[in-house]
Image 1 (tube, rainbow, N blue to C red):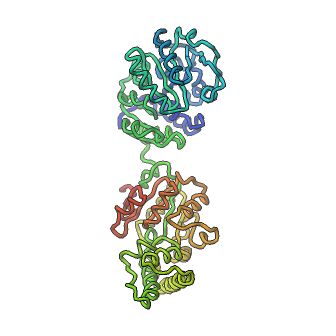
Image 2 (cartoon, helix red, strand yellow):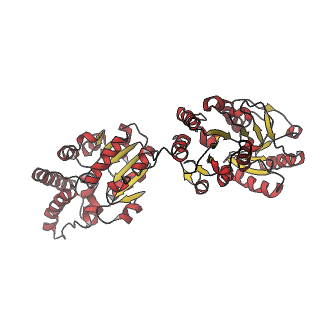
Image 3 (cartoon, one colour):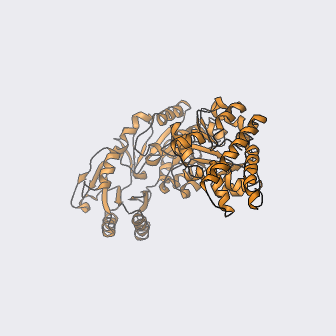
Length: 506
């Protein structure tokens, strides 16, 4: 890992949350940087006053780059170290172009912010962000002398993008136009960009650019990525921005800045989630039972085959096929749903009494098999569950089986899980079975973890479909039957033959 002596961070979308707050973890990360002799600097499209609330919590002592580098000010926000202003004629041309395109126009000059109408949604949003009110003027052309930034604001993101492109063609090398947010296009001096910010700070602090780590989320941050020794894109960045960075951290809603500092700057080692082969945002693991944790799939398959064959034989139907019918129609589904799916595949009548009889017969056969044979577990899966719990992640079992609880007890696994959502719970709460995500959603709710922060572990096609449909943060397919491609097609983000494969090598 490169030696880093300065971290240069964007503000909105990076250092602050979507609610525009700096978290205690971000402040603690800044303290850890200082403890290691590493400075923290910030750069933003905001005016200097708009970053005042960050100086004390982050303990900033370095110059602050406002307006994407059009102004460089002392950390007390009063001393102007550098000001790159727009030529008046260029400013007037930009104002006219923005208004003609149907965007609102704002002018920033020093610490002042000028708007035509303070009642628009974007003005009110910006005022809440920067925490000071704009001055109102009916003539923006009258406040262009010394202007450092002009903003075009609009709710139509496609229009904002189109205006950005048109402005670049129109003003050429006389100014720099770029979107700082999907709803803002910023126009500044041609040398006012975040690449220049990095150069300015490197010069003032007597550092080589290779000793600087840059963290950001927007296209305006890419220019500093190109010069920095370490570049980190936020998890909430676009794919294009992520491709320009060496590393990707979690989102600004999930402590992305703090995680980037710990992992890519201080080198504190991989996160617990990384050691488990999971994204850093994951806080809970939701496991299917049969085929993932316990080796009872063969018992279920044998019970299904006998129950179906007893029904098919008198009707002159071919026997139930373990190699295809089990995985395709019944594995991972509630019993009645599995019966209906299989009978429909044979174009047989779906009489309720027949469905109930077959399901009950399967249940009786399975109970007998469970009494006759001890439940086996997959050693790699047990090792993985224990590692997840050691790492502080919540764990749950989500199974369509009504025998999940006795199976867990028989296998000696009952104490490894915080909650169980099985066929009994699903029936009592009227939850739809897999491939519907309802049972997995119920488990994440019981653990008080958002689906986006939970990982699903499944060996059944219907199970990975459920994980995908529920928008869970990660879906792991466990391939016990040589159908890795099918698991991926049905929604698995990654497929492994054994959960132990996800663990970092010792």
